[in-house]
Amino acid sequence: MMMKTESEPRAGHQYHLQSDQAPVGLIVAHHGISVEVLFESGKRRMVRVKRNSEHVVGDNVTVAGEVLKRLPRRTELRRRDARGGIHLVAANLDVLGIVVAPLSPGGFLDRAIVAARVAGLQPFVVVNKCDLDDTSALLGALQVTYGSSLPLFPLSATESIGLDPLRAFLSQGHRGAFVGTTGVGKSSLLNALCPDINLKVGALSEYKSQGRHTTTVSTLHALSGGGELVDTPGFRDFGLVDSTVEDLALYFPGFEEHGDLSCRFRNCRHRTEPGCAILSGVEQGLILSARYELYLQILSEIETDQAEARCRSWRN
Ligand SMILES: Nc1nc2c(ncn2[C@@H]2O[C@H](COP(=O)(O)OP(=O)(O)O)[C@@H](O)[C@H]2O)c(=O)[nH]1
Ligand SMILES: [Mg+2]
Image (tube, rainbow, N blue to C red; front, side, top):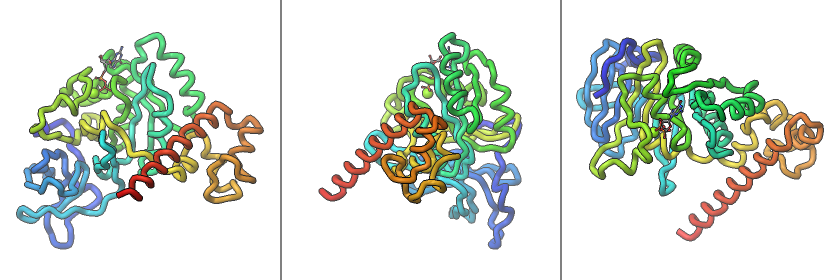
């Protein structure tokens, strides 16, 4: 069960009573075979669901007896598991925090930003471990590349330094989740922001360490100062569904002012196409060639993945 915090998640804040007068609630926890629904009245109730029911944390629902009815979603966030299967993680989030720290693998951040934008979530960057000396070089580089297009929060989760600007951002009414590679400090950060949550820090894979019969619980936490965070253990360690080449060409960070609309071809991949605004941006020095090189590298990786996926589907 989720513990009560000072401020409550906003149950069905965009809908009041539905026409059938069933009360509207918000799914605040998913236990596999049941979900916990928080109603506008403040009441909570467990409702049984089928294992493969598509209800997720963040869903607004009406409850009539034992029957849950889902209301339309504004956004859907999906993840990929170790075997390539795709799962819905949470509904109705509006921001995605991408956590990085020194030695984070390159490319992850850009892929996550693109994936967030595709899903209709506003990405922001958390630069964790700012108590360490080698974080300042990383922070400087990130500020140059992303500082003008994304909110950036340098902080230290374990030393509780720099958390207030992030709290203030979330308190504007945002509902978000964190992604990042293992070891960047996502569990530490959730612990720092949601003291009631108590996650294991440094556990290599929360997924593997669970017994086979343990249900992964995802929960939605209200922050005492406002805003909400969703915690989905599998999501923290496996990360996002890859975007398509079209998504990458459209949403790669830094291409915003030069891309799509001004390229001659609407589906321009910014590689060799004539009249490409990105290529001329690189030639004129408006886009750093290192950024462009990274774009090409990720583009090739996604093309290879998509080609392999097509081969698999032909064989089957
Ligand atoms: N120095 C420092 N270490 C941190 C910080 N945040 C997390 N860590 C450490 O980084 C390791 C991984 O943290 P964890 O929260 O489990 O990362 P996760 O895999 O992303 O959930 C642990 O040893 C933490 O103590 C920080 O702000 N500063
Ligand atoms: Mg963790």
